[in-house]
Amino acid sequence: MRLESLHPTSLASMVGLAVAMGLHGACAPDSGAGLVSSSSSSDGAGSGGTFDPDGGLSTDAPVEALDPDAACGLVTEEAIAVPLNLYIMMDKSSSMAGDKWTSAKAGLTAFVNSARFAGVRVALRFFPRVADDVPACDHEAYGEPLVPFGPLPDNAGAIVAAIEAESPNGASTPVYPALGGALLQGIDVAKNHPGEASAVLLVTDGQPQGPAAQCAGVNPEDPDAIADLAAAGARYGTPVRTFVIGLPGVNQSFANQVAAAGGTDAAVLVGATNIAVEFQDALAKVTGQALPCEFEVPSQVAGGQVAFDDVNVLFGLDGASQEILPQRPGCDGPGWRYDDPASPAALVLCPATCEAARGASIAKIQILLGCETVIL
Image 1 (cartoon, one colour):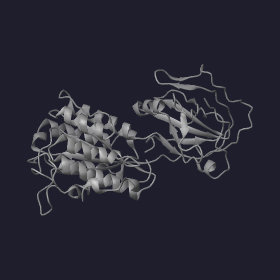
Image 2 (cartoon, one colour; image 1 turned 30 degrees about the vertical axis):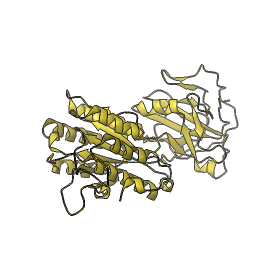
Image 3 (cartoon, one colour; image 1 turned 90 degrees about the vertical axis):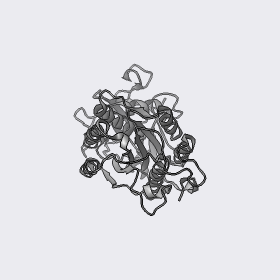
């Protein structure tokens, strides 16, 4: 089976921020609230504000403050973040031997045990695969992960054991079938898990080599052909984006081309000075970028107990206090919007706010129900 043969309309929808988050039913954040609010009601009021990408939330913007005496409903409901499924396809060709492999093991071990990404579902496979009766060009031969999808940190042990048991002994770097198989798996996960998102992470230190002179009439070493695969995944209704981490020795032009075609702008390149730390940072950066800024409409709202125009979002980054993030339907600046104003199913952070949240070490988000929405 080839990736190009799949029909793009068969996917379901996309990964909310993998941050712990709760809903608090008053008009202001409880000063003692953490990332997850308790299931209790409380009184209070919050001041209006907007988010400044360069300086956090600003309370001097022209946003009307919520009235402390407003008759706000006291509603508490836990939010549901949309899950992320990340398939890591990792190069184990012989050029990875030595410090690169040792450092990659250390970086991956630290990443999968990081509390920051708890709940992200990760799968792992290495390439090239051992030769067998299956044609070397077959994408599907790389579809099944060595370590199946499972949430972190629960899946960390299996992932660490897999890379400890593996050796960088591959004779070639068949990116074409490996990436194609990972994308097919990502698409399959998206189809079978509506409301979840999928992304593929390609980790390599070289440039495409093999597995044959031609794969169904395509040169598998042609960067354009590989980029076309990434673009096919990114074109689906719920995009399966391709991220690339380039370890020392990677063809940077190739890595950037595939990442751009896969909807992720550019590869994350790791230097040779401190590979383990830089690789861990690269994994964190990629995973943060893969997390979409989308949250399900709370059940109290979807069920009609709370009106859609009585919803507010509290937002804070890196330990800063939370402030009201205004609804901005046109998303021409920081804020949030409903995915479909006529029939909302999700709250979506606007691009400026999403980018800031993805780049933060901690994003604290709460949804307040019962007070009139602050709108810009």
